[in-house]
Amino acid sequence: MNAFPPDRDPDADLRRLAEVYRRCTPPEPSTQQWQRVQHTIAEQTCPRSRSRAWPRSLVVAAVLLVSLIAIGYGVLRTGERAEIPSPVAVLPPEERNDEPFAVASVAEITIHDVEVADADRIAVGRLLLGQLEFARAGDIEVVESRPDPTERWMPTIAPNATMPLIVASGQEP
Amino acid sequence: MSQSSQPGEGIATDDQLLTRFASGDRAALDELFRRYRQAAFRVAHRLLGNEADALDAVQEGFIKALTHLEGFQGRSAFKTWLLRVVSNAALDLGRSRGRREVVRLDAVSGPIHSQLLRPDESDQALQREELGLQLADALATLTPIQRQTFVLYADAELSYREVAEATGASLGTVMSRLFYARQKLRAYLTQRTPI
Image (cartoon, helix red, strand yellow):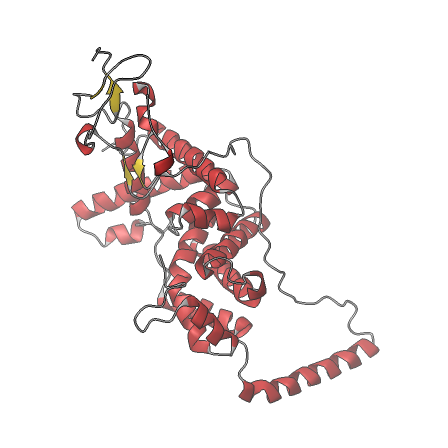
C-alpha cells in the first residue's frame, strides 16, 4: 500500500510519481461555476458590436457628464481609475537551482562512455512527468559496435535486463 | 497540441476566433473559453490549491489576456500566452491573499465523494485522496517559479519550448527547473508512507 516504498528502482519511482500526478488531477468546476466565470469574462472583454455603439456612446457621455458635475461639487475626491493592469510576466529572482542545462538535439549527441551509476540520468522519450521512458537492454538494437579507440574496450549490452544502458564490459576485443 | 494555428476541418483556429472576437463575436469568446478553460483551471488550481481562488485566477487571466491582446501579437500560440497570464495571475493572487503554503487538493476524491462509493472503491478513493494530499504537500515544497514551470508542463501539457515562452526563461533553464522540481517531488514523496 505504500506508493513510494524505499529501495525501489529510480525509474519505477518516477513512473509512480507520474501516476500519482495523473490520478490527483483537480476536479472540474460545475457547469454553473463555469457559466458564471464565462459571463463575467464576456462582460468585461467582449467588444460591443456596431449596433450597440451608439447607445454605448450615449451611456459613456452621460457618465462623463455626471462625473464632471460630481467633481465640480467636490464629491469625487480621488481620480482613481478602475483599470485592468497590463499583464506583466512575473519573473521571480534568479534561484539557486537555476542552472541552465545545455540543450542539444539527438543528432548532436554521441555517447562514447557512461558510468553505470550515471545510467539513470539518461532518459529516452518525453522527459519528466508525462511519457517518461528509460531505455532498457531490450529496447536497444546494436547495429554496430567498435572498441574504444584509446582503451580498446569493447562495448556490450549488459545481461541484466534492468540495466538501462549499454555499458563497457571491460573485455578486450 | 491545440487548434491554435493549424486550421482543422471545420474547426476555427485560435487566430480566426480572436479576429472574430475583436469584431464583437461573443460566440468566438465562448469557444476560446471552452477550449482552454480546463487547462487554465488545472494550472491555477495547482498553484493556488483551492477551487474558488483558481476560478478567480482563470477569470482574471482570461480578462487580462483578452483585453491586452496587443501584448500577444501572435508571437506564440494563444494558449501559451493565455496560460502565461493565468499562471501569473494565480501567483499574484496567491501572494496578495497570503498563499496557503500547504497547497491542498481538498476536493480530490473528498470524503463526500468517498461515501458514495462501494467499500472497495472507497478504499481506493481514500488512498487516492491521501496521495493527492501528499502530492499537494510536495508541490508546496517547490519554489513559486519551479511550481509554475512544473504545472505548465505537467498540467497544461505545454512543451519545453512553450513553457520557456510562457515563463520568459530559456529552454535550458526550463529543463533545469523541471529537473529540480522532479527531484524535490520524488524526494518528498519517497520519504512519506501513505496509509
